[in-house]
Amino acid sequence: MFSKTSKGTSTQSGSQPAVKAAGPSIISADLRIIGDLSSDGEIQIDGTIDGDIRTKSLLVGETANIKGEIVADRIQVHGTINGQIKARSVTLARSARVIGDILHEDLAIENGAFLEGHCKRLVEKKDVDAIKAAIPTGTAAKATPAAAE
Image 1 (cartoon, rainbow, N blue to C red):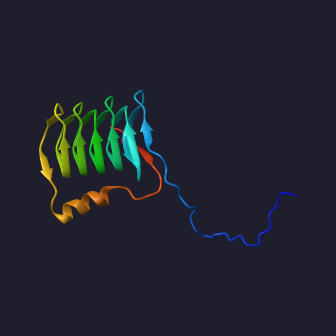
Image 2 (cartoon, one colour):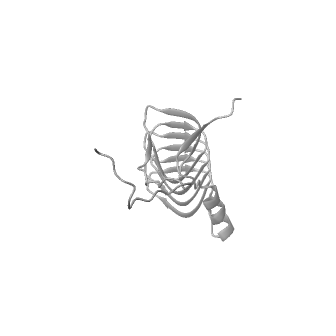
Image 3 (tube, rainbow, N blue to C red):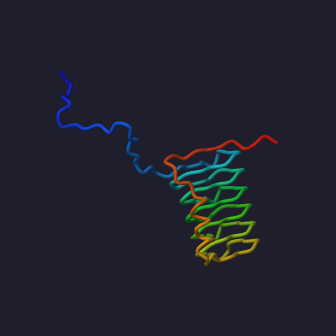
C-alpha cells in the first residue's frame, strides 16, 4: 500500500552516507570534561575542560575555564585559558584571561584582556600548514578520555 517501487531510485552501495553540516557543539557552564576534544566544526565552551582541544572554530565563553593546548583555525576567547593556543585567527575579548603562549597569523586583543605569555606570529607556510594538519578532518566530534595517572 505504501511501498514504493525501485524504479527511478538509485542506491549508493558501498559508499558512505552524506553528512550534513551540524550546529556548534556546546559545553554548558555546569559541565566539566577531563579529556581531549576533537571536532571538525565549531565548539562553544562555557564549562570546564581539562585537556587539549582540536577544532575548526572555538568560542570560549565568559564562564569557561580551559587547561590544555588549543589548536584551531579560529578562536574567540571571553573566558579563561591556561595553556598554549595555536590558531590562524585569535581574538581576546575584554573579559579574556590567557596564561600561555599564542601562535597566530592574526591577533586581536580588546582593551581589558589579560595575557601572560608570548605571542608569535606565524608567517612561514610550514608553520601555518602545521596548524592545518593538527585540525581534525573527520566527520564527527569526539571526546577521548585522559590517560590515567
